[in-house]
Length: 302
Image (cartoon, rainbow, N blue to C red; front, side, top):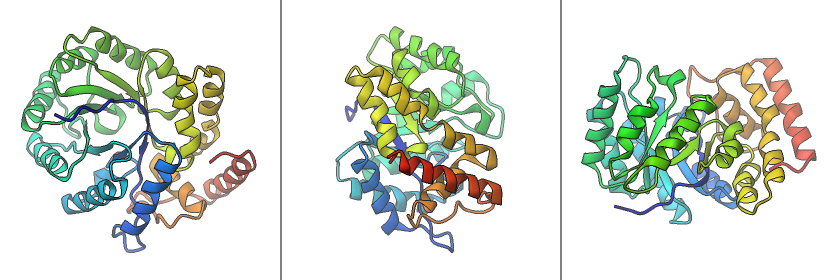
């Protein structure tokens, strides 16, 4: 199994699209370079910001091949391979391993309610089907299913399950997962915040960093949160983390990943819209975003 340290600010890479909603691989390559040049410590494909929920299997293969090729080993590449069924999750995970991804991030099954035992068996089956590090992904607001700390503790005992991304929005939940990591007997279990505003607080509590959608807009600012923290410059890290608050306030105007992709497009990058129907931003939202981006540019945010 690959040995990959789960740490830092991982950019939840968006998926650029042409006007016909096909994948814009040329711009995808540009965004890979932009995230790495901005200091991001790893790249995450097919998360919420990557629109993994709406891409076909063939499109996921194309995106992952492109990202891995363009990255060229400069930073680890995470592949979001979670699907509703265990069978398809195994298929996608094996595809990612075949292409050379470094880490799998597997979201919980969605739509149908799953018991904690079903969630445990789902991840256990996938872990036995691949020889790769797996980061669990908890985002109950989107999936309807949550990984309890007790289930995370059971899963943490599986050798290649090495961490969890928590997007529940509950810091208490993050703290509970961190306790799971401290108790793991056979190696590390890293906790990553899926809420951009909680990255510094996760680090201070003993977590490993975060997977950040807002890094698509401000890669340097987000990655500096981890770098400043590691350098012992905690107050500066807190300030950097808090500086994205106004951008996140714009999430009131639409789907968060739609707002993020729109912001990147307004910065001048031809990333296109999110795939329909999740692509609407009202006029007031566009005006607010444009004003915010101009203000942050004047502050030197990038």
